[in-house]
Structures are given as structure tokens and as C-alpha cells.
Image (cartoon, rainbow, N blue to C red; front, side, top):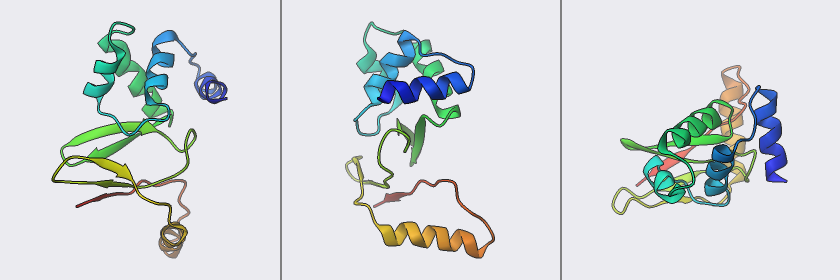
Amino acid sequence: MHYKTLRALLKKNGSSITKPRKVVFDLLFNQKPQTMQVLIGRVKDRVDRASVYRAMELFEKLGIVNRLNIGWKYKFELSDVFQEHHHHFHCASCGTTFSLEPNPMLETMIGTVAAKSGHSPRGHQLEVEG
């Protein structure tokens, strides 16, 4: 099922599902947010470093992945298209990032704040640090 959605998103934008893209996608599927360094380390000899960067650049452009800005660093995870919408907490002491429990009140509040300024959000990301 997830390859069908990936293939459709790529095709819609004139791209196809190549071996490197499939390998990178598989490394992100059902995983916690990962840095590029971790992704490249997990790829081993299956895909070269440049292909990982190209795949991630395309995935981010097409909304397949989200970039989580955490301090001076960033991590990637699959977007809400491939997993349930959630927010993150990043521990400044140990560096761990984890998903926060869903909160319908928070989602309503984000929509309400946007509506008060005459906007309708298409999406959002929230990272809490502490």
C-alpha cells in the first residue's frame, strides 16, 4: 500500500520509483526521525551517498518527508501521508526525539488561531524542546 502512494506522488510530479528511492523510503518507513548521517550509515553498500541526498531532496520537495529542525541539526521522517499526524518533543540533554501523544484540543487551537488571522492551515509541524 505504501509503495502505491509513493509511486503516485512521484508520478504526479514526473518522477519514478527507482531502486535508490525505494531503499531510502524503506529506511524511513515505520521509523523514528533520522539524521542524514544515520540514513547514509544504514544504506551501507546498497545506494551511494549522492543518491541518498538526491532522494531526500526530492522527497522533501514533494512532501513525502518532513524536515524536523532540532537546534542546529535536523532529522527527517515520513510525512503525514504515510503515518498519523503527530508532534515531537526533543530532549536538549540527551538528544532524544520522540512523538507526543495526539491532542485534539491542540489541533483545534492551531486551526482557530490561523482562522482569526484569516488563514486556513494546510498543515503544520510542532517541535517542543526541553
